[in-house]
Image (cartoon, rainbow, N blue to C red; front, side, top):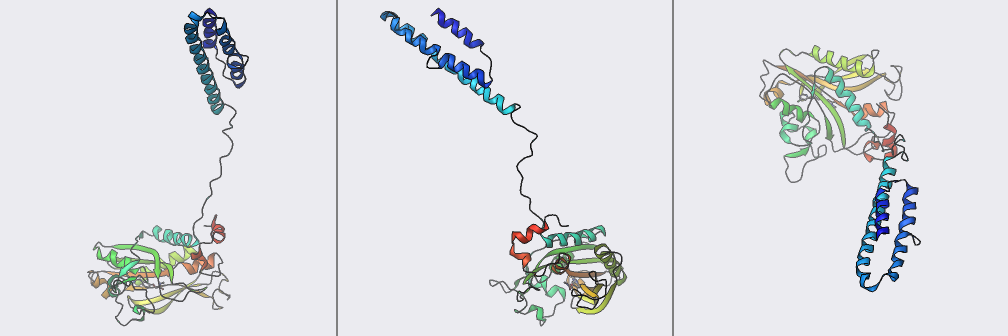
Length: 338
Ligand code: 2NL
């Protein structure tokens, strides 16, 4: 009994927690030739009337020793985890990075140029009613764009359709009744066209709208000059050609001197030296009145441009369908593109 008390003191005092010492503890006290086993062997020499008492003390000693061993062992593993054996300066596991879509890259470039001129970004629904996509925009009843051949209609409700331009969002901005307005509207639009390498039934565009007192065609030209300089550099030339849109009057199309060949003639400009980049004009008074804006007091300009075509040219992509196939071999090529 006295011997057991001595061992208990010794065990309590044991404090080395390195792996080797803990193993030594196990062998010394709990091993097959260890102290606990040895004392158990003493049972046969204990007189019968004291066997019960001694048995209890022995069991308690065994549990005590095992608990100490478990405690030493867990301290040893804790020690290992927080200790020098793990090199915290090693680089972590790599996290796979995605990349921005080329259409998004081009969209962001366009947006950021107009934002510097004070344009805010507005977004609107892709499923739209006839009013916001056509009627409010002075698009006459018989206009071919309204034809089933050109527009996707929603079956449940003939008044609903997939927007054919982001002008719907500008109409919604005008209807809010807060002037002046200076917004750009990027987004996806839909047209019922045969899908090919050059055209798709959905694509993206950015439209712009500026309405205030005394906004003139000169403001429109200067805004677009700034855009072209920022987008294609100081050296590109610009030309306006008269055009027609039901929602603008007068209307124009803007070309830039070919930024690929510098105007000498190449595949991109079809050997003309010019590339068409957008349509624009002064907002038609009927459109202003449709949105309850006084067309005697306010004037404005608007413009619209596609995103896919400039993206195809910039990144030298030969098929518009690649944009929507989600082939990672294609998308990964834009990991470090800007
Ligand atoms: C093009 C031509 C254009 C507009 C879009 C517009 C919007 C409102 C009122 C008047 Cl709410 N106009 N947008 C004006 C002229 C041209 O887009 O070729 N787009 C790809």
